[in-house]
Image 1 (tube, rainbow, N blue to C red):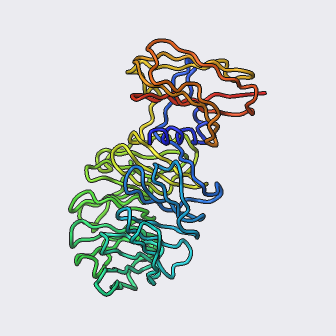
Image 2 (image 1 turned 30 degrees about the vertical axis):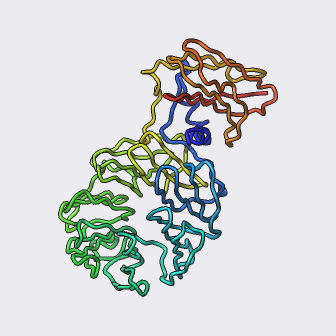
Length: 417
């Protein structure tokens, strides 16, 4: 698994732009917290949904189909052709696929995607409470679907005082909150965001009296039994959605993913992802090394997370998403390359703080292995050097990965002819 992660590191295409801008004159290693994962979708198409069961196993769907990986995204299998906008798996066996444009039905599998059955409920957006209960979200419409011995039953709440309903979650077993798109409320507030409450476990819904403001909610975070945060419009509530206050500290976050301990992440624009360790109260915005906008995110644990976005973007982090320009300062590990740019050859020098197994590999930005300069069971501490013949390499940007059991250094260099 470690090797698959290292290969994925160098696939961060825009790293060549932001990385060169930030690289120090003393060749201090730059390590973005996010790594671009090789993904077989067209770079012109967007990834629209993701669902990971653990740090290695999960799904990514979009305009090019539904893809499955068991090695942290190093390799993908096209499991279902078509255009899909949402995927959700409860475990390695049971999951759901929702079509992106055709909302006439949903696909369900109980054997890990080997076969699929069709459930004829129209839906492009479903929030699952558990494997037996979900909510189909539509325009002024919420449908509760429940698994029965004879199939699935539906409870439809239609003609709601709402626009398009985008997100839903619950404070407790009875109290639910749904947020969404703008809709007409009054002449004073013609573009008020959708806010709906349920006090009977989602059987019925109503709009709270308070309707001030305008905008769109893209996602929701339940903080505790009474508090919630609405992202996109960036408001907070402390009374289950009856009243809201603006929170400008949330920036441009849209979709978010949080663990029960308060650690979470949120999508942002222009190559940044928000990270919070206090249930969304405060945020740091970490550079992913790309220029892409992320549209979906899933935190698997406090170290591992995946994000998707425009132009076939799939990102992974194994360190909680935090960038670190000097990640190996404590170990004393440094690496230098010269000359850079290189014409005919390049020399790498590095100093090892410990006696360990070492691999040193060179990759193109497309992910192809160019050369392995070192792969030793045990390399001594102290100074070392490796040379690379660049005379036969095409002009462009290349990445190197130096790793052992305890550390990894990532960097780039240029070849010109």
